[in-house]
Image (tube, rainbow, N blue to C red; front, side):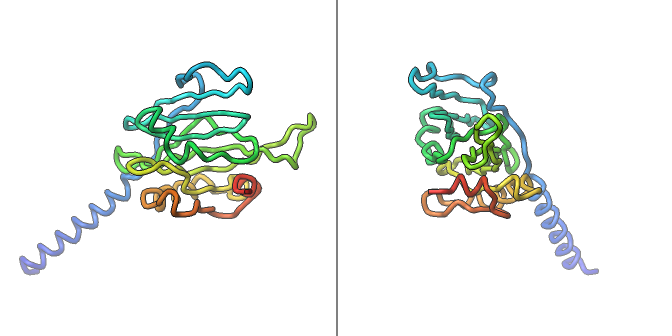
Amino acid sequence: MTRIASLWLALLLMGTGLDRAGAQSLGSSYTSTAPKDCRQIGKPGELDGSTTRVCPGKNGLLVLIAEDDLREVVSVGRNRKLAAEEPAAKVWFGPFNSSETTAEWRASGAKPFAIIQRWHIADGTDLDKQGRPNTKAMLVVTRLPPGPVCHVAYVDAVANPNANELARTAADEAARGFRCGKDEVKIIGASGRAVELATRR
């Protein structure tokens, strides 16, 4: 093999190794959004019991969770004010709902670019023995700064046995290039009752 051919082979192998390293740098870490691990802002509303709390996130970001009339919004920002101004802080699902208390952070190296959270959407047509609505589970993928914070994708957790994998793939492939306010939120996998309830207008 000539010296030039050897150089080309070395460069090719090096490039392949870098590609693999880049692909391997995508990963998940987790933080808690449970009230005990967060800071409550002010006192609960006297009339409706509304609450706001901020929770530590990753890479200098915090998670803002506001609950009003048994409905939540979740946003992310460098501080509470910035998080409250993001598009994600203004998206309310129609039915009663709540988010689970774990946020999964998808990151490239040390830089997170999306969070994934499991939400529970109340189904008023499916009542338990006490007459309360049962809830249906859905995963929400939310893009992170730089750029606006907004919902990117919904994955029905009942209709899709591999919902977690679908949500991670959606985060990895769509979150960073998603244009808040221009692109439509993607329904990933099979659309089930939770997604139907969440997207009903």
